[in-house]
Image (cartoon, rainbow, N blue to C red; front, side):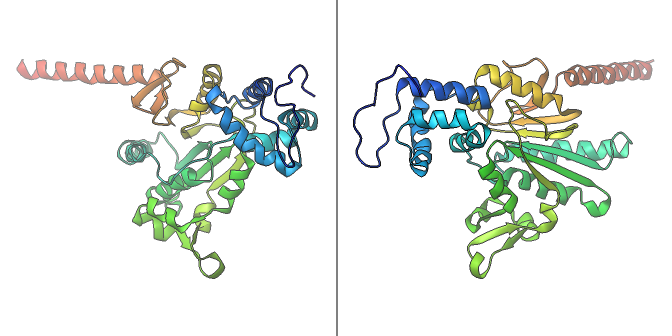
Length: 318
């Protein structure tokens, strides 16, 4: 048990849970920081209480110290449930449209140019880190299947990972309220989403063809990336770093970059920036990054083009 903290230890009414003490909050902060890299600031105290209280009631526990003891004694099984409870999983289809426009207007033409020059195969690998309930990886799958159809010889592989087993189960099922169809461009909706009928009325489900290119795995960005192997052309890790401490952010970014292909792109959330975390990246537009050495490479190419143009102009004058 947690010792040396008398706060909240008074008599209880039936079903009541003792208030979270400062000492207990500190212990949960340290545990969650260590295991998941998530930094719970003091304003998040109420959120922690709200989310864990439901679990305490389900287990018939009367205090947060009893739950902390259960988590630390039982090990990974209850720890996984704890992390599920504290994860925030808000997401949408085609969230942050400017990033999807960037894919269509810059990245996809670049890939086709590389294919024409023989510098890339007909294979695309994408990692959706912190995929939540699946809207992000399936949005990417729709775009890629439309632009690079497997019937034309393209191989599409999307790895979708999350810390929460609860949301991964929902993502694997690929079923959402039909109201979410409003988030999907019409050109993708009919080919890739099935409308529920009878017992499934009011719901929509991803098509089997699209489901076949997405693989879901549990991964902890702060510690265990064993399901993640190889290099990826695109890595999406959006609206996740904001929950980490500075130290954890830098560690996670390094791990992401270790899996980013030399010509790959890393996408982060609209409120996130990597400029103060690492010198390994260069921002091509806000929230989209490439390896830092690409900046020097593009500068050299631009200089070479400019130099060649000057030489040709001089020759034409002579």
